[in-house]
Image 1 (cartoon, helix red, strand yellow):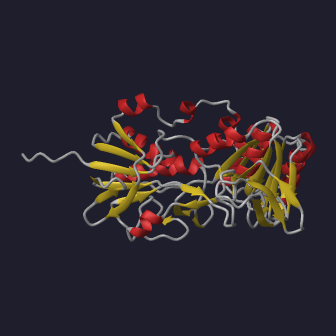
Image 2: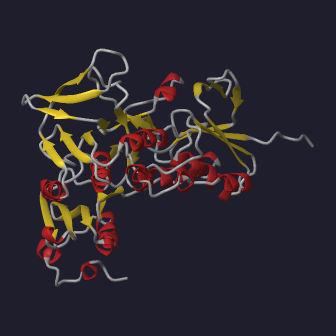
Image 3: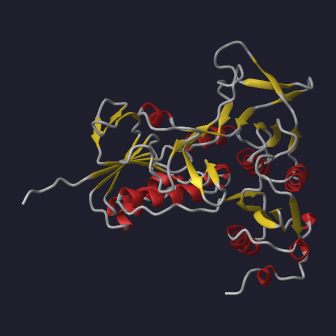
Length: 415
């Protein structure tokens, strides 16, 4: 009988999705070689705490790790940190690394995630203009974020507001600059945006919306820091350091260079397969068909990375299952937990359950009478029930949804 060599399943990307793929391969009984190639030196880690507890100094780096070193060794998963893949040779089924070495694979998973979008303005490369996407980014911010210092955060999305809430609590003077007319404009309603704007201003954040940056002010020598930001209304904002939080760019260059189909992310089918049958992809870098939304979507979400990662592992093992997920997200700001389910785009009615002034409420988004999304603030039980309503696209009487004397659970079907 001929002995066949143990197959190698390679994973490009040492983030949440990559770790989930590796872990699920072992859970499903795969006993071949599993190699994770991470561009960062750190073991696969969780990114959400970076702008919150880790930035605040309340967590050790090791607590961010999805899998500890001992766990990787026990599962016989090879992790190669600081390993940058520069080319995928699909024909030879080999990966070329930046150090010139090669790695042959039988099946490949691409979980390259995304990178922080950079500001395209002269001076954006100055030493005190920082991104917030990696452990190394946070270390740089921490070194500058002393009480009394002036921080300017560009961008009023999740990252910008979470960083603002964390820094202002530690005595940093924080200004947030948002180009759109309101914060969180791409993900929530004007009512919820207005609530978070009020919360931040009451906490001492100088929050400015609808503002455009015209230039940075700095000395001519190469290592000079930016001292002021000039705005289109001719005002000038002083800064000791600047955090740019204007979104994420999917890391698709490797896939594109290998000839895989890319369109706002690596295009995958409902089982995470790319245009190459031996290559799957998962996480922030993918564009997948979403049954719930009835369209293709690229999601930047831990839940998507985890669940799609598990689906990718099963597909690699020849056990494909359709990946179905109702998108959900969360954000911690001050003592508030914002939890969101569904995508509210296209709603024609909003129902507020509770009092916004109480700092604990739910907002339900309806389209033609059906619940398509919900945002809850510090209402974990309402969120769990809202997930069921949104998943089923339930038709609910708005008056009952708004009435807090009607138990939310009673609006769900029995059983």
